[in-house]
Length: 138
Image (cartoon, rainbow, N blue to C red; front, side):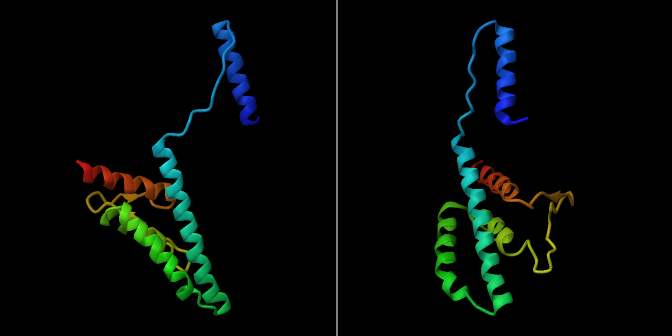
């Protein structure tokens, strides 16, 4: 069943309960959810670009690092403008250290409780960055 079919079904139930015609609108995204989407897209794109650069070097012996370096520098400077040092460390760790060439992934653990901190997706990194922002604003 499609999303539209589900919405139509819910609308018909509401109409039946209220005994009147109703309308449903999709919730408008909040400013924070838009920022989250942009952040996650940025991480995915940077990860793709970095993987492509490393793949070109490994698979075809073509070193694009010197060519790509000014782009990475510009992006890193924008990240520095917007995020604290702790937040930058989390972002850079995810982009450049978490995913090992062997295919394995490093994990973050809480030093006090030894619990694994979710860090596999850009959404997880967004949550960590937001946690550090809350700590810094207190």
